[in-house]
Image (cartoon, rainbow, N blue to C red):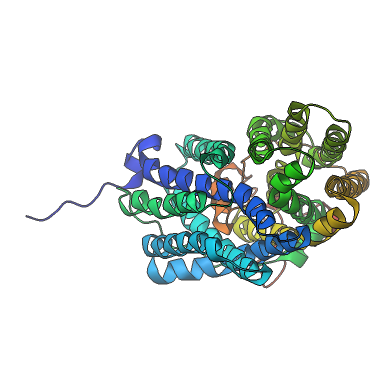
Length: 452
C-alpha cells in the first residue's frame, strides 16, 4: 500500500498549521527568557565584575550576528529539521556548560556560541511560520505565533524562583526546555518549507534611503542590549532580592506586549518617524523614572512599573524602524532590508554593553539609565531633524510586528507592503550588490537617496 502524502500546510486551519512550530517557539523562548535573567545573577555570584558581564553580553551580540549569516546556508545544506536538531542539542549543551564555566573567558566563549545557536534556531522557526502563512491566514498565523513567543518571554522570569541562582537546577531546567523543543519540530505534520533565500546586506544603500531606520535599529541595540543583559543585576544592586529583580525583566516584556500593537496602529496613521522619535523620547523619560524610583527609596512596585513603561516604548522601536524602511523599498528588497537592519541591531547590541557596564562600575548602577537616556535624547533629536528636512505622509501600509530574531522574519511582512505601481519601471537587483531598489511609487520623487 502506498502511503498518501502529508497534506499541504495551506489546507490546515491557522492554529493547526503552526501548532507544533508555535509549541517549539514557546519552549525555546521560555528557556531563553529565563537564561537572560539567570546568567547575570549567576556571573555576579561567581565573582565576575559588572564589566565582565558587559563583555559576555557583547559576545552574545557577536554570536547572534554570525548566526544570522551562517544559518541560511546551513538550512539549505541539511534542511530545517536537521538544522534545528543540531542547534537545539548545541544550545542545551552550552547551557549545561555554564555550570562549569570558570573565569570571564569561558563565559564569553560560551555566550557567543549560544548566541550563534539561538540565531539559527530562530531562523528555522521564523522561516517555517512564514512558509505556513498564506494571503488568507497571514494575520491570524502571525498573531498566534507572536502571542505565544511574547507570552513565553513574559512568564519566563518567574522561573527564577524554582531554584537557587548558584545551583545547577535552573540550568538543567533550561537545557531540558531547549532540548525538548526539538520534539514538536520533529513531529510536525507540516512539510519542511523551502530553504531561506540568499541574502546580501545593503547597509550603505539603506542608510542613504532610510537613515532614521538604520540609525534607529543600531541605537535600539545600543540601549536594549545592556538593559536586557544586566537588568537583574541592576535590581540586586539597588536593593532588590533576586526574585524581585527577575520581575524587572518580566515587566519589560509585559510592557512590550501591551504597547506593541497600539503603537503599530499609530505608526500606520502618521509618519512612522514621528512615532520613532516619540518612542526614543519616551524611553528617555522612562529611564529617568527608573533612576528616580531607585534613588528615592520608592517601593519596589514603582521600579517594576517604570521598567514596564521602559519595555513598552524601548522594545517597540525596532519593529517601527523595520516598517519605516520597508515602506521605502520595493517588495522584492524587503528581505535584504530587514537583514541589514538586523545586523545594525546586532552591532549595537555588541557595542552597547561595554560602555554601559563600565559606567555602572565607575558611577553606580543608575549610570546605566543615564547612558540610555542620553542616547535616546540624541536619537530623538536626529529623527526629529530628519522629519523637518524631509516631511512624509502616513503610508497606511499595515504594521507587522517583526522581532529581532532572524533575517527570514522579513518574509512575514511581505503581504503588508505596498505593491509596485502599474507601469512602473523595473527596479534594480535587490541582491545587495548595488543600491536597494526604492518603492516604485517613490521612484520619481526628488532626491530619493537622502530621504528617511
